[in-house]
Image 1 (cartoon, rainbow, N blue to C red):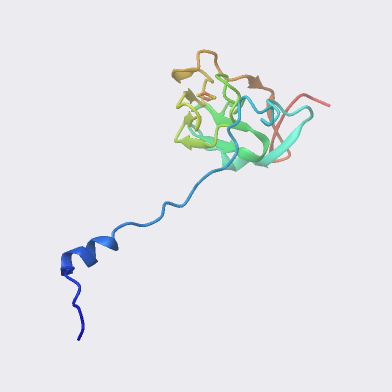
Image 2 (cartoon, rainbow, N blue to C red):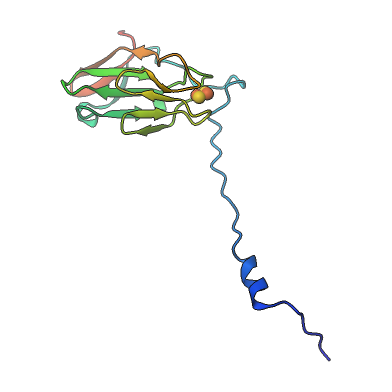
Length: 141
Ligand code: FES
């Protein structure tokens, strides 16, 4: 004799709906841990080809914590992409808006200005130039 479980079909199907959430977890944000990346290059750094940054656009070089933008008139600007709020490395660029993963501050990559709190200070400007078809940022040697 077998005892039949009284579970309905609905009970069985509902159990399959839950899926584990995959952690995104980069440890890039540890403002109190003392492991944040340096705010600025200490020597000239070749970031990439000059053509990578279009007029009116911006590119985030995450490996160097630098964002480079180019005005409509072709002028290059560069800023440290270390958030001025608590030192997190900014890892997202939406068109020309930088978005900090830690507390949601936003910055204008064209000017370095704060677009959204909690940050109150603009990004630190860096020297930048086009040299032999490459974008170079950081203090002159
Ligand atoms: Fe960027 Fe707080 S460290 S918003």
